[in-house]
Amino acid sequence: MTIRLKKVKAFTLNEMIVVLLITVIVVGMAFSVLNLVQKQMNTIKGIYDVKLETNKLRQSLWVDFNRYSYVFYNQKEERLYLSNELETKYYEITQNTLVNQKDTFYIQLQSKTFYFNNQEKTEGEVDAIELRTSKEAGNQQIFVYKQNAAATYINQ
Image (cartoon, rainbow, N blue to C red):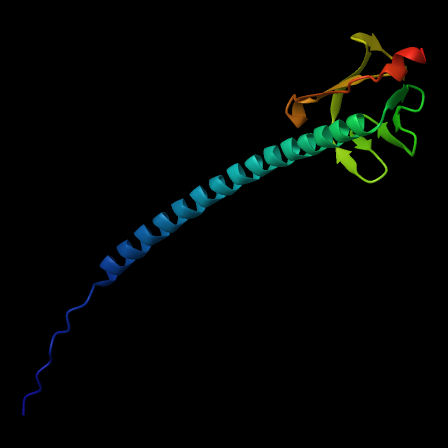
């Protein structure tokens, strides 16, 4: 009685090691690329968040400047007061934040300039404000103004 052994076609150990080595290299490169893409996405998200915060502040200031008839800046308190016949609102301005009664805007400011009748002012009634953000916040400029009513000129 003779036993016949059938030879099974298969990969050799060397071929399997080569395939595993190539797979490890490809997967390692894929994770490296994924890491780079994640870093890039986080950078883009950071830029988007800063621009969104700046735009929200610009919109809030624009609405308030046009809603209130009297705008006054107090340099000692670093507050921008806005008032009309019915109510008064203020923005507290610091180096890293602007806080009004409802919202806090986390924006690093490089400079703030106040104007009245196209003249720079350090304190008192204002009709325009220019804020420049720091380099970390994208070096953006926020400029908001309002049209003065006739009563503004009469009360001076």
